[in-house]
Length: 159
Image (cartoon, rainbow, N blue to C red; front, side):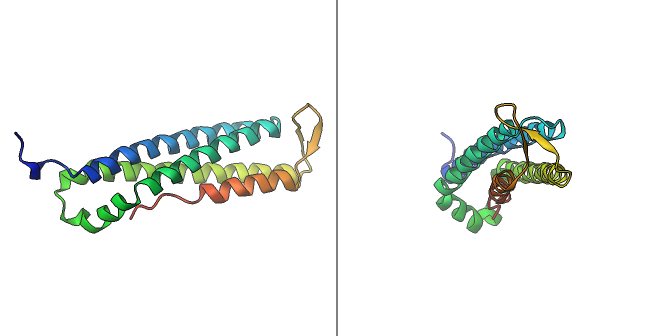
C-alpha cells in the first residue's frame, strides 16, 4: 500500500478537476467569441450575435458556480501551495496558466467585437434584425454587449 503522505491531498485533486472543467468553459467562450467576431465582421444579423452572448453568459455563470463550490479548497491552496512538493501542484498551476491565457484571448476578442460594434454604430451602419428587417445598432445592442463584457472581464481568482 502506498504511503498516505505520497498521495495528493483530495482538495488538490478537487481543485484540479474543477479548474479542468473551468478551462473547458473558457475555451468554449473563446470559440464563441471568435464566432461572434466573424459574424460582426460579416455584418450578420444581430440576433445571432445576441444568441452567442447568451451562451457565453451561461458559461460564465457555470464558471462562477464552479469557483464558489471550491472556495474552501482554493483558500486551502493559497495557504499551503508553497509547502507542497512541486509535482503536487504542477497540473493545477498548468491549468491556471491555461485559464489565464484563455481569459486574455477572450478579452482580446471581446475588444475586437466591441470595436466592430462601435464602427457599425458610428457609420450608422444597418445590421439585419431578427426577421430580416434592417435596424440600426442602438442602445439595446450596446447595452447587451456591455453587460456581457463586464461579466467576461471577471477572470477567476488565481490566488
